[in-house]
Length: 377
Image (cartoon, rainbow, N blue to C red; front, side, top):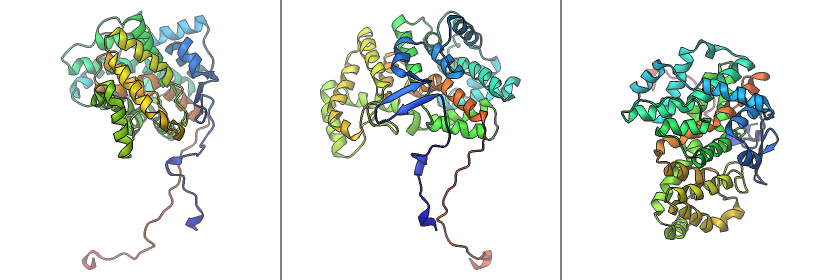
């Protein structure tokens, strides 16, 4: 009987529900949010506009965007009690601290217990605004500094860099961070989004689902690619070493970090927008060699593109963070900043026609056995 059951390990190729949020065509290398190409959104949009689009289904008018932006800015601060909790666990990994801080926000905010679509969206907007503050506060506290208070006039991305570094970012740096958040904002039923939906399926609240998503993103197989790419770049050292590095990896049948994707067979459509950003930021900061190393790896990997080993978005992200002087253990939390609206709307969709997500596992253990008393074992 069991031989007739088809096992799809990792649920690969399984459609568990419908979604009107993002569409991915892995064969063609295409991604869209709500019917808008990621290329248009990354070229012309802002993260605030993309947040609104994901949460509300349409691009905002000027008045709608102003109201939405004001709400995000109004919710950037976090309670002092949460900062005390961050200080108590300041030596932990930033993802562990972030997850703990979001749990603390749930315990301290009565509205966090509300469910329903309106409550999810309102709490989602609040959490989207607060997550950068939590991450920046932890970075300050663990380095013996007082957290930088949110800036009332800067964009979501600009304020993040302000709180992290204590100085206003250049227009280009803020825009590159903005694009980074847009590219990571939503990506279908990835591991963390699916995990969040499983949590919502139990009729849990949004904060609980976001904690689940953060826990899942923290796993290196999901959120760790940008950090691994930066380690690879540092190991290569100079552009001249890139080809030899790739040759050695392929000879040993080891993966080259930043190539290949669970969904895309063609190049990740998000990658091109980060590629140019790395080049420009490297020149601006007097470190063009990082971009040259990356491109050396891309060139050396080009023969394998026909096998689906194309560059993905995280191939470039880590170097951008490195150029900003951001510690490697913050790379995954930065991913979380961008992904917040995607998690929120996935949770909203799950709740609309909620059902407990309960797949099956096919038993392949021992046949039925008789109990053996302990003195006879």
